[in-house]
Every structure is written in structure tokens, then in C-alpha cells.
Image (cartoon, rainbow, N blue to C red; front, side, top):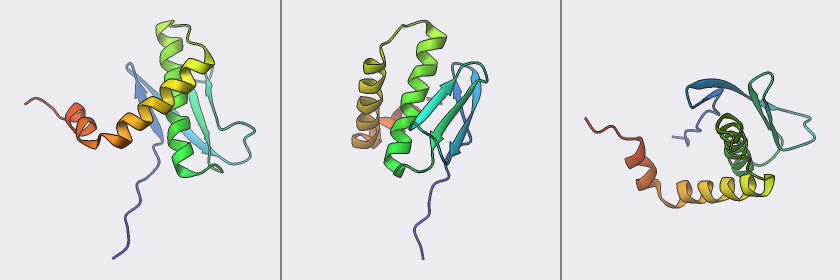
Length: 102
């Protein structure tokens, strides 16, 4: 029996807005947030872990724009790295946050 691979997301819901996520070949950068087209793009040519961090990075850019936080690019980079580490190193916390309090 082989290892099941998780599918890459084709969209992400951020503050009520469902945004398409495209994994693309031939990109100059690792990722982008297009605020006019309301799309996120991630390079399919970078390693899988980098794709995940890049998606988090672009999601933070979206939140920054939607909430008018005016974060520097350095702050977005640092937050994406820190959130990725938090999620990776604390799966029980992620599970608990995702659970419903029924």
C-alpha cells in the first residue's frame, strides 16, 4: 500500500473571500497575490515545503491588504515562516483549533 498524497488546494477562504490558488510553472518569483484578479499564485517548480510556506506568505499578504495592516515584506516573510513552524511542530494545536466545540 502506497503513501497517500494530499492534494494541493485550488482555493483558500480568507476573511469570507474564497480566492483561487494556482500552482504554476515558469514563474519568476515563488508566489504572488494579485489584488486586482483576487488570485494567489504559487510556483510549482519549488520544493513542496517551500510551496506551503509560499502559500502562507501570500495569505498573509491578503490579510495585510484586507485589514490595512501595512506590514513590511520582511514582517510577512517572518510571519509565514513562524506560522509554518507553529503548524508543523504542533499538530495537536492545529487539530484543536480546527475542531468544533459541539
